[in-house]
Length: 465
Picture 1 (tube, rainbow, N blue to C red):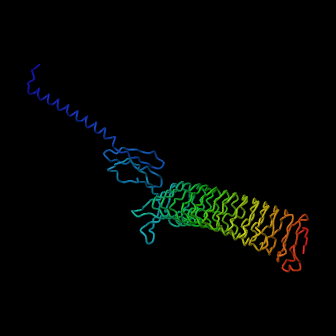
Picture 2 (cartoon, rainbow, N blue to C red; picture 1 turned 180 degrees about the vertical axis):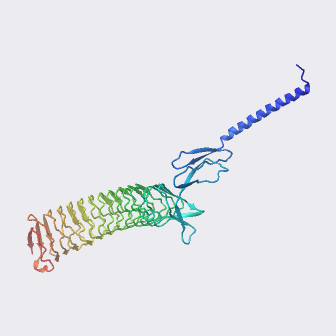
Picture 3 (tube, rainbow, N blue to C red; picture 1 turned 90 degrees about the vertical axis):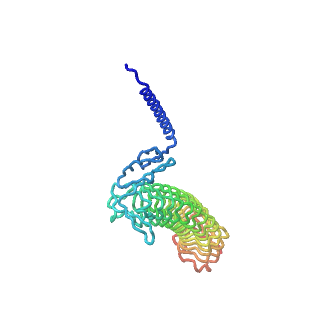
């Protein structure tokens, strides 16, 4: 073997040393890079119904995956900038339903949205926050209403997703559209008349606290609605708002409510109890009519009026405490409340309407204060109260109208004071031989008594001049 000259050997040694340094440098860089990974941020991509994807942002940058496809929708991530990522984050897929129509709201740079040609495959409805850079703030009146002119197939969505920025859901916007789930955004301020009425599938809905206005019949005839959460600052429950919600078991009315509209809870046949807020002074017409499961109700201390048929046919109502402020109990207020056992009429009540307690077949006591301001008993007020055992006239009652005690066959004895100046037609119809009517005063002075006040009455009558 030939002897290597010194010059060549020197070069080889230098080359080896340089390679070693390079290797060490690469290892050091790798170690730094490895340590750097601990500082890289994680980005999680979420798409509804899809498995989450988590990607490490190398050097503050990440390449987003494709948005998973969803039939009938166009999707995009809710973030467009994936540079300079300085913290862990979650990015969500946003889907906009194809076949939507956008119309500028008069006088505003805002869109209202309605359906276009929706595919039958569109089961989840996504309402975007904006369209072409302009915010979407309203669901148009009749926007998705199910009628033969717009939707030829059965209108049903498994869910409807609203984006933040939506302010108003218009009149009849989703009427007769069956929606399983509704996701309402904070910031929504108004749900207008009949907006979700006649929905047969929705079971629960929570209104955000931002909602200040509900329209009449907004949730009327939502037959499967069981739970309802109302905004904490709502002031009015409008007319027919929950009428025919036959599965509604309970609902909490916010303390801010000062007005309830007529028929608001009419025929909510599963509603078992309810507390009326203290600011409410009137129970409106037909408010709880035919709420057949209603066992108890708490009335506010300042109540003045129970209007026509307010509790008519509340057949499970056992008792009710009328506040001393109650001045008027209107026509048919408690008619056919067949479980009602006792009623105490406040001294300040000056009027009880016709048939107010008619056919309350289990009513045993109707108690009047001797200071009662009531001056007349209206037509049929206790007609059909076959279990009534106790009733005492008060000094101010001077008029007894027609059929007042018709069918009160458990009332053993009744005393009619001398100051009663008017007695109506068939006032004691159906009374039997075991019953006694005692009439005080001179009959010759009772010129306004009906000639037929005892017609169809077999009770014993005792006159005490």
